[in-house]
Length: 262
Image (cartoon, rainbow, N blue to C red):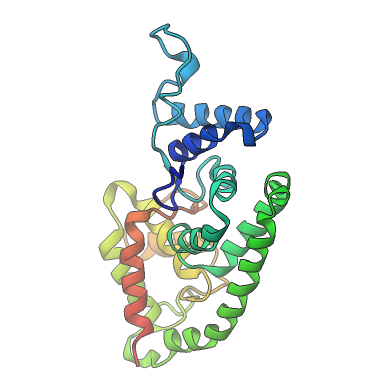
């Protein structure tokens, strides 16, 4: 029985499939999963099982709650490892490709680093089941693919810079990069989520292979640039990485628009 209906890191779906084949997994892993689930449930204002007020005994109803974790959220790495463990080996590559797009915005370096750290941190789970071999093969393959396309993408995003003015060359690579920033700002920045929205723009535009924001630009420097030029009043010193799913189609659409410029 396969209870996965997609490749999201959905804690409720993962719990159901894990407990369906409970005899295949060590009790310590179940204990760690339920502890983490209780923390996640409390964070989502859901009463965990052991605090359930009805007094009718233990029930798993809360653990089944569908909560989809995104990169950067608490226990994302743990449930990512469980997702790998519970996925048919013939589907693991599809899962890895899906997560690369949905949670890492197709950024190679961050994703490879995440996967390599995951294999180390959860080696007992993943090595015993040979999953590490599949993930390592995937890492090698995407590095090869990326090296083939990197120059072409980099040239596309940075050529013909005279078509757009770049009033802030210390921040942006060229006029195309600045124009991308303006469009992303207009489409994604909301008054009540300014820090999170600009954080999304900063980290995605600075990531490889786009490199639209200069590599030397720090988070405090970008915040100062925003406060000086766009009437923001951001007082934090860091822009925490967030990659909300609803913004990804907008970002991808704008990036593709500028990548296809002659």
